[in-house]
Length: 356
Image 1 (cartoon, rainbow, N blue to C red):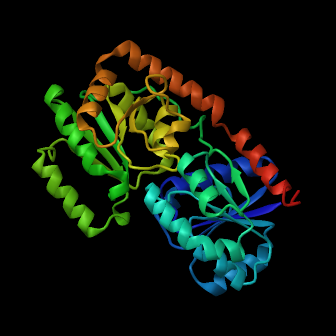
Image 2: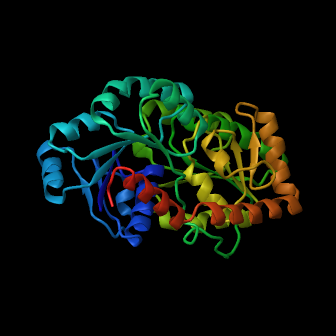
């Protein structure tokens, strides 16, 4: 069985997902390749499977004709479904819904994709995210649906003891765009700093994915809130280095803040939880699969800065609760998001198309 996964660019959560599932599936006898249409920061991550980076029709056609894939998983880019058929691919095409933004943005994308899904697609693959499942049932009731939880590297992502930072850190991982809601992160940090004057901010993002307008707005708000002397920015960090940073955040007495409007899954949050780094998050849908309030993490209502500040301070000051959340979060990830579960579910999906 040979599978091709496709996406726009090797960056962010989808790059992480592709890398992890290809490693998992290959250990279970499924050969995996990945095609990205553009280069990206994720090319720094070492992999044990073929990765193609091209947006040229003839080069894509050569990949298809050379490797004869049993199925292709097309993530997010519904236009590629038609393109692959036009380039001669006649096998199973599965559209994967990941990273479609807010519920309203996801709705628009799915509506726009309907003609392509009807004409070229055999099924849709989604994580167990309520708004995505509801939208596909409503908009595409005729389309076969497969729901498989994303997988997390629970062995690679674990707490790494090291010298703790002197001051507490509130960290944020994402892109400088509206759905990731970086502005709310800055506002929350600004207010927490009133109680924790020595607070530091760490931000992990890829500047190449941010528009000039977003960069300018970020710089303006950062200075207006007086946080520019508190901020360390980490750009294009290799994914395998992140356990060191998550562990340092945990050891500092701080936490990871996820301020997203909507998440299909939320890889940064899941990986932090694996590293016993406490997390405060909006209830952004996808993260519900691994955050239970005051058990494996903390939620705050989107837009409620005061509530976020109160929850964040409790996470920093209530040590018994903090330690329980860190332990229980790690245990939940190990139990529910290991490699074997994904490989079993994926093989079942392929078998349903008589691919063995």
